[in-house]
Each structure stands twice: as C-alpha cells, then as structure tokens.
Image (cartoon, rainbow, N blue to C red; front, side, top):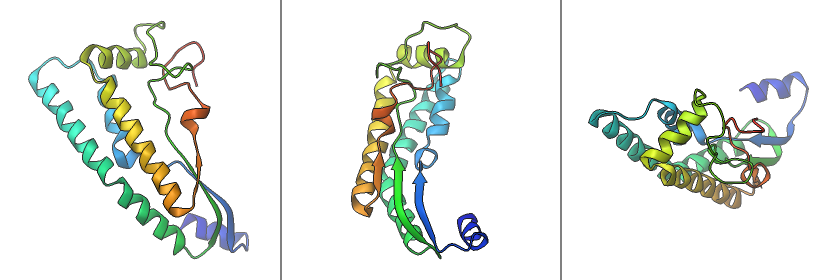
Length: 168
C-alpha cells in the first residue's frame, strides 16, 4: 500500500528497483537472537524451551518456499510495475570479518559475547549455521524461481553483529 501511494504521489507506474531483505523474521530469527543472548540455560524447562524453539524454527524454514511464492504473487499482482527485484540473503550474525565464529576478545559484559559463549558452551553453533544455510538456500531458490537477482550479503560482508574490533 505504501508503495502504491508513493507511485500515485510521484505519478509513476513503475518502481525501477525493489530491494528486499525479507524472510528472517518469518523464519524466527528474532526469537533465536533473543534466546542466544539470554543467560545460559540453567534448568530443564529452559532446555526444553530452546529445543521447542529449534523445532518451531525448522518448521518455519520448511514453509519459506511457499512464503516466497506468495511474495512473488503479491509483487506480480501489485497495482504498479516492478522493473527489477533484488533480494538480499542473510549473513550469519555470529560470524566475524574472517567468516569464522566471533571470538570472545571483547568485554565479557556485552550481549554478543554472552551469545558467543552461551552458544559455544551449549553446542548450538551448528544449529545456527543450519538456520542461515537453510534460509539463504530458500532465498537463492526464490531468486532462481522468480527471476529476482540475489545480492549475496553473506559473501560481501564477513562481519556479523558481534562486537569485535570492527563492529557494524
């Protein structure tokens, strides 16, 4: 609706470029980031909550192809034309500039340090790698299927959100 209103206000029928970074919230990245920076899991209830969150995230990721199909249908049926669709993928937020997991060189009271230590200690690093790999694969497939162009942010920017020597 906002794009339609903008087109009307500018007397335009075409949006030259539609740049999207979409899918992370749908896949549950907000919940995962929150769980990662929470204090280390201290009881069985917390562990079962995190296991439930992992299962829910995997279910959401399985639905991503349908989400992107519906998104493309919405773009194609919009009351304006779109010249080109550019879609960004997601860098793994726990990777540093070298593409590896952020190390804990920074202050122990920062939330990303807490996430780094929590995830390493409790062995969930592979789960987070799985999330970003699966999400980015869904994005790449959506780009291929819908003639969108992929912007590989994960290849361009090797620095995640951790507070290392060169933070965002």
